[in-house]
Length: 395
Image (cartoon, rainbow, N blue to C red):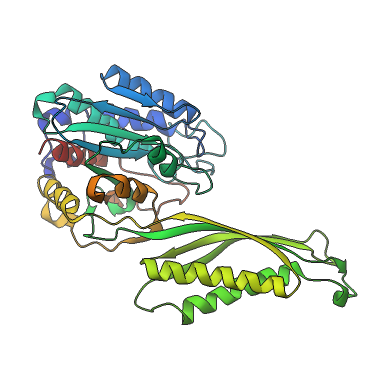
C-alpha cells in the first residue's frame, strides 16, 4: 500500500481494500467497450455486486443496471453513479494491464469511476451498521456517445425512482491525486452533438455554374456560426461551437453534391445554449433558399447544476478526507458536458452534485487530459474517492 495515503484521513477499514480497488480498476481497464456495448463490463460489475449482497435491477435490452442496499424502508435513498463505457481509441499505455480490445480504451477513466463505487459498495456491505441512508449504485451505459441513449434511457427506465439525492465524480489526471474540485451551482456545460448533411448538385469541375457546391455551402454554415459565437452571445458567458469532422466529395474534378460535418455546441447558461441552437437552425435553413437540401440533427443534455445541499455534503466529506490545500470548493466548471445532469434533474428536488477528483501525479510523470492518449492515472486516488462517497452515505 502506498505511503502517500498517510496524508489523507482514510478509514482504517477502507485501507484494507487498497488491493481490491486497484485490481478491480485494472481488470476493468482490460475490457473497455463502446457505448451501449458494455457486455463484459456489465457482467463483471453485476457479479461483484451480487456477491456483495446487493439487489440488482436490470433492464432488458440495455447494459445499464442499478444495485440497491436497503437497511430500513423508512430511510431515504442516496445514489452514486458510475459510467461504464469507453472510448473508441487504441490503448497506447505501456501498462501490463493494457486494453485487450483493439480500438477501445478507458482514456476517460471510466474504469476508475467503476472501481471507486465498487470499492464503496464493498465497504458499505461490510459495514451496514454505519449507514444513515439506503443506497443505490447506478452503473450507467453510454455516457460518451450522445447518439446512444445513456442517462436519458436509464432515467426513463426508472433508475432515479425513489432517490432523494445522487452523486458522481469524474477523475482528472491533470489534477494531483486527491485534489477535489467542485462548484456550488453549474459544474458542466449545456452540451449537444450535431450532424449536418448538405446535398447539392454535382457538375464537372470545369462548369461550376451547373452545380451546387455542397462543400462550400457546409463551410459557409460553419463559418457563419463562428460569427454567432463572436457577435451574438454574451462575452461574459462562455460559448463554444466546434466542428470536429468534415467530409465531402469523391473526386477532385467535380463539384461535390454532398458534404457532412459533425461537431458540438457548448454553453454555460440556458439562454446562450438557446441562442446557439436557434441561430444554427436559421443558418442551415438559409441553405434551402439557396437550392440545397439539408438535414441537421442536434442532440444533447443540460448542464450539471450542483444543488446547494448536495454541494455542501461533498465539501464536508472532502474536508474530512483530504488536506485543506487539496480542496477547491469554488472550482471553475468544465466546458465539457455530462448526461449526469439528467439524473440530478430526476432526483427528488433535483438534489445532486458532481465533483472532480485528481488522479494525476506529476512526480511520477502522470499529468494528462481526459481523452488524451496514452492516458495514465495514479491508482492511489481510488480510495480517496471511495472515502468521500462513504462519508456521504454514512452521515
